[in-house]
Length: 164
Image (cartoon, rainbow, N blue to C red; front, side):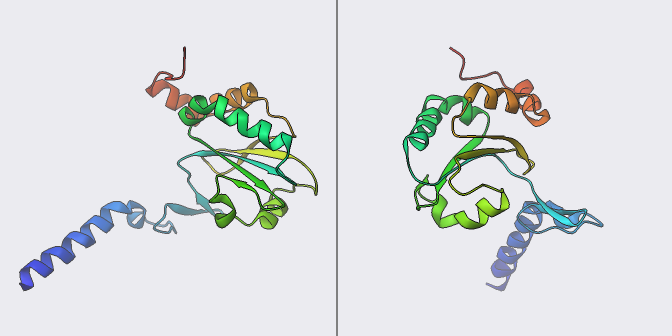
């Protein structure tokens, strides 16, 4: 029985060590979630790009943005884009956004002015890539993403599945 317990514990330790290879890196501070410490800041490598749309209320402009996400769903999924809508009055899409993010902190962090409709494209490296106002030019967003080095590498690995 002791042998079985030892094997079970050893396999858990091995799985953890394999799952978090950044622990093995010399001279690096990191955490088990993939964040790495670089030049005084933690870098959180993301598996997706984000478009965050901020608005005062769920109005016609928010509905227009949400419709655009549906129309461009294939292209957004192919580019690993997660879209989020947050309004000052509490609406969010998807619904989990309001439980995960604090609207007031995000508008302060991204310098969104009171009453503005603003959208921000965040790259997989966690940095702001594009910012725009109330209406969204989906072609510009796709072109901006497609010009990114990470996206260029992704396009070399696989052909577009969204072409008709």
